[in-house]
Length: 213
Image (cartoon, rainbow, N blue to C red; front, side, top):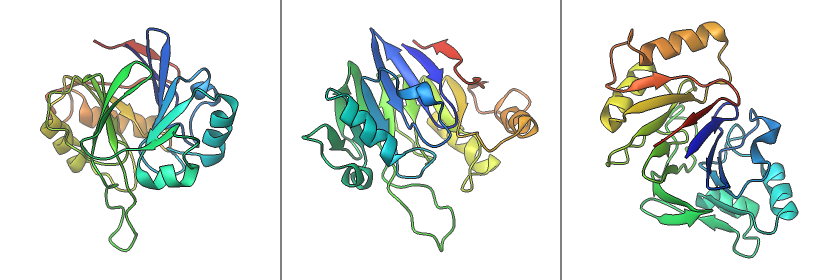
């Protein structure tokens, strides 16, 4: 399985000719959904989900399927069963990938702001995309995608979450607002110069690919 970063929170997993796209939002490279086999959406925020883009993709490809939480599924409509709502403990097959669902809610941005639903996706028991939440799947994880910067995160919360999940390696996502200095600073906390997470940390450039187990 190959992982490619397509900007901010979006990654594409490729295996046996299938392309699984996760969270193609407003900061995503335009080519992310080219020839997509299936799409996963963690939650409704624009940096993870653009309704017009997804609706156009569903219209253009009658074989395309989307899995997401109940709120996003309601926004998109069922499209004759091609848009499917999933939640905690669900499992399904998407374009040849085995996917498990963990989590229910977005992390708290501020107590005065309403929380939205958020689901995380574990693909082939290898790579976990949490969306915008510090969800702990409770099983062995090889590759953890780490939200590097957001209004709801902190260095303490991020490091402690990675420690609790216990992956072999981590990759930065959710990092579009950062300049080069911000990237260097935040990635340093997750790397060998930081307090330590027990995982090897990586940052991928736009369109950079890496082979996963």
